[in-house]
Image (cartoon, rainbow, N blue to C red; front, side, top):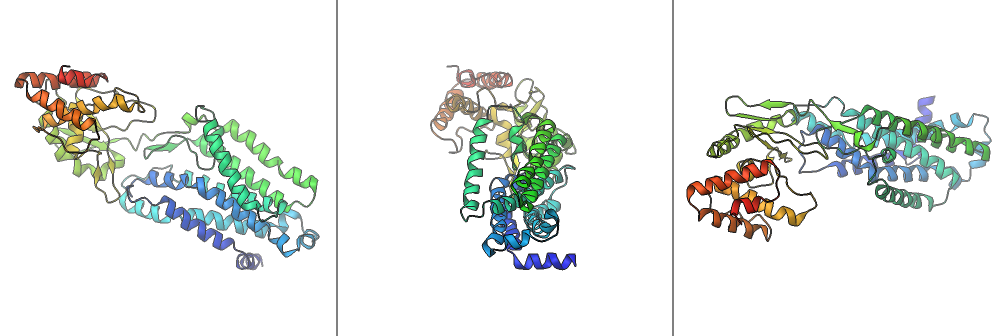
Length: 439
């Protein structure tokens, strides 16, 4: 009997089509041909970020569905039935919540399938963002049902979407410079994350409490028939808000680096070349160019003897070691390594095998001479007199000028200048161009 009721409810409403539409939108927003399919957590987090747009759509779908009884002019008849209010609206509530939640989760099936085939490391906590996202979409649908019954105007759905987006935009500015937990109440925000992240358990628990409370409020509001019951319907969300804020960590602690994802996997033989466990499938593409680069660097005094991928957590800087070339790279959608420069060899030789630092991330003018000096040192180590036309003006001209000045010196002085640049870069000094050119 119950199954028949649900089947009828699905057939006579647009809930199923809402779910299908949400699944297609989620799959489209998550798809990225430049993201490697093997980055399991990156795929899950990209899908979760799509809630910026999917959540208000689910809310609007619930609002539209909540208007149904008003449009059919049967609200009074349904309210007069002897069944308890929450039980009376259970079929409609569960159908809209189930279809929307299923649509959101279904939008990730393609991405997870690709990750399952390509990845060698599966983060143990990667399913929790999917859980909270699915719960939040179900809560949006139920909350929309309640709002749609309370305000059954045709304008309610579009206005509530606009209002939600306005709140999120204002909230992002409001909490941009704070470290509070308030912004974690947003459906899509999980803190500062990347492919190496794992979400803190308190973040998951706090968001689960908050969205479960919103779902309870929406259900109760949809079932309410009197002013008193509508007021009481708000109580779960108030309690849930208080509990969630007590449980949620600060924004900076919402996510942290996964220690298993950053474990090193090293190639056989010497010199030592290692990448993180996440990027283990890309190791064969890196070994030979890395060892060629180390051979070129061996001309320098106190030259590095190993190449190690070492991703930097958000807001931190790598502590450089003289014997190690630290580097980062990405993997394209087709599995090829992407360095940001013309080759892996050029990436390792950039800055004579040092980490790029010395200026603030937003200081464009400060980075120009640093980047030019680093590129010129790498090109000199490769025995090249000119670099590729890949830099913008004035960096390209500064690279060519630095190389010309360097080549005009005696060979031993050239070597001393590049060695001095390496020492300065290890200390993150901003005057690399002056060190290399003697200006």
